[in-house]
Image (cartoon, rainbow, N blue to C red; front, top):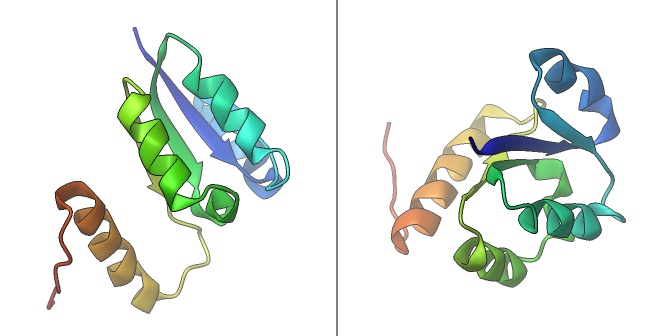
Length: 106
């Protein structure tokens, strides 16, 4: 069975551990080594990254990792995001999945 990994900053340390998932707490400075360790695990199936750490994960590097990884890498929206940014996040996911920018009208 494949494992699910959550990578978050320190402020989310206890929530995911209580749920019983593999949870790694890191900061931007050690994020790259953390993600590489998980990508090298043969039983990793899903990696969920808190979006606050994505500044340390350049888009080009992420694309390369997604192509070589046998699982899925997802962004976890930060809890304090304004509502206007939520739509931007959905458009970003769609653009990354289909390779085309889509305007959403709600």
